[in-house]
Image 1 (cartoon, rainbow, N blue to C red):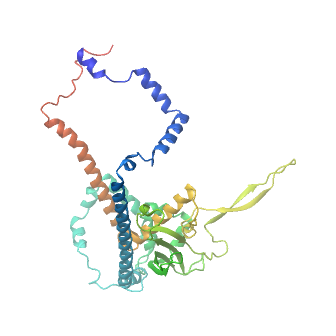
Image 2 (cartoon, rainbow, N blue to C red):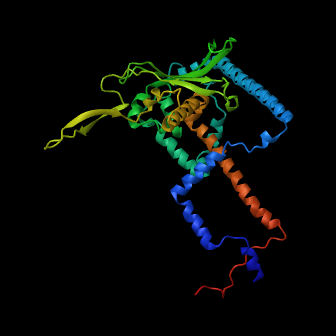
Image 3 (spheres, one colour):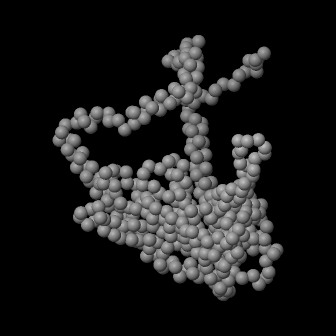
Amino acid sequence: MGDNIDSTEGSSPPKQESIVANMMQNPQVLAALQEQLGRVVGTSSGYIESLPKAVQRRIKALKNIQVSCMKLEAEFYRDVHALECKYAEKSKQLYEQRDSVINGDYEPTDEECEWASDDEDEEDGGDNEQKLSQNELKDKATLDENKVDTETLPENVRGIPEFWLTAMKNVDHIADMIQEHDEPILKNLTSIDLKFIDEEKTSEESGEGEKEVTMGFVLEFHFAPNAYFNNSVLTKTYKLSCEIDKEAPFGFEGPEITHTTGCTIDWKKGKNVTVKVIKKKQKHKGKGQGKYVNKTVKADSFFNFFTPPEVQEEEMDEETEQLLEADFEIGHFFRENLIPKAVLFFTGEAMDDEFDEEEEEDEDDDDDENQGEDDEDDDPDFKPPEENPPECKQQ
């Protein structure tokens, strides 16, 4: 009896808990709480102001040191970008070799086609299918859907058909952008190139002649002559800044996007897949049936990627910010992953690596959860809850 009293001591009465729960479901109450919390966040506790003047003076010195650290961090990012530019030039020849194989301009020798895993695959035979887990089978099914229909390909086919389309469709967040009407166009994609921007200019705002470095990169999508547009290359440019805001220096978190531009696509007549024509009924004040008119509206398409929202200097609305953030993530993925590792995305091996990392994270989480159970088993004072005896059944 005494145990029951101790276990409930200090707890809120059931009625009070019910009242609190109902209040938390009231939108007006939640709004009031959020407003109060907003006033508290960023409000000084008064502790710093209460410190001796000599200590406050030293804190200001630490802030100056912190700004110097951030300037050094900005310099680090600029040096990293300079290294990227340097090694991009070194990689250029390798990417050109890759393109020549993909597009059938060069046939690799037998020696160049040797790959150690080929022998291993032959030894494993059909056992590989049985080893696949349920999630791996699902990924394999997705890959199979994206594969070129090999039955329609002649034996003497040039290069690797639909290489870039297949590689992009093997990436979920890029595949979501690709519509069915985009695929015939993307089959003409022969190469995706990456070029870096590294511009230096003297700041006009600074009387000290400080130099500003504009960093960035350009994605170039090269197309074979096709029935859809006249462009041979479509470009997407991202410009970044690594400058520290003098008015808010502690907000620096590394390079940030300052500008993104696409290009004008010279669509052939009736081939623009980024728009569609719908019939809309006109409203008439008078009697009789309304008249239907054709109206051109925006359509979902991968090629909307080349008309991004503009970065505005004034405060942007939340939707525009989200669109820009998503746009930059896609561009960054092309730059960091898809272009350098294109063949691995074509084969699906890059997806396997990402899947393995997720598996390891899940296993770590499971280990953390099981750790608590193991601790309970090892604890000599731990007593599991007693099960209800057979006779204690509810009537």
